[in-house]
Image (cartoon, rainbow, N blue to C red; front, side):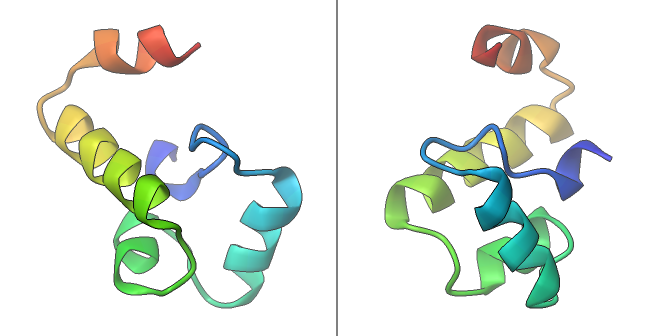
Length: 64
């Protein structure tokens, strides 16, 4: 479920997330291959993907 949310990305709003979903982007992999993110958001999402793969809960906890 975590990889279906984008609200943790800097500057991302609920409307932005809904627009991505409506355009067919359903998860982080879809988002990374789409043009719907800024460069900074793409970089953040790559870091999030790595943290998720590495089971780095502290990374996500620090975002709260």
